[in-house]
Length: 262
Ligand SMILES: [Zn+2]
Image (cartoon, rainbow, N blue to C red; front, side):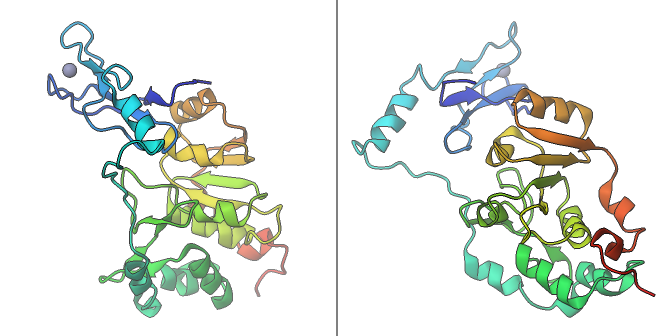
């Protein structure tokens, strides 16, 4: 494990280099906050043609943040992509127009019970947008709403459940819809042996919240799985089936130990 707070981001994500303009630039991340450092900190991987490298330890940035945190300096304005809760609340309605929710109740081969669909809506705070699409809010482990749809700097979908259910194993998938199906098929996380279903792109900074948990990864590409292994998370199992497509063919009651529907 690295002992440095600021490190070049692991993985293959590249940004535009501020010097040569090519998309070959690896940025520094703050391993405490999981945010990127300002755009100028990073290293261009065009080692012979560009050689741009601005290290936060070399130009005083690290020291400045340290002083700021010790209370010597007034805080700089930090970008905090936190969404206000009122805006989220406004999406929590119009479920009769919500195509995704209506599909769960009527159009799938084995429609779910209204009480379970209501419960999954409450668990993940799924909402409805102005065109009848479902919104899947990204709420972080501290309960901050980070956005209503996925974008680059959000947390995992379902991350807020990790603090609510500290002992459950975690099922990790790519798409929030799959997390919803997983919950409906395998059951809600009240019993501590049930999965908490979370979704998101498999980037190391997002996955840090899962450290120390028992995690089952679904739908993970091979190179991403290798990236995860390198970060030494404890992952117990790997399945590669597109999960929602597989589950939807079966009666969910079979997975929940309830008698099948007639
Ligand atoms: Zn460059």
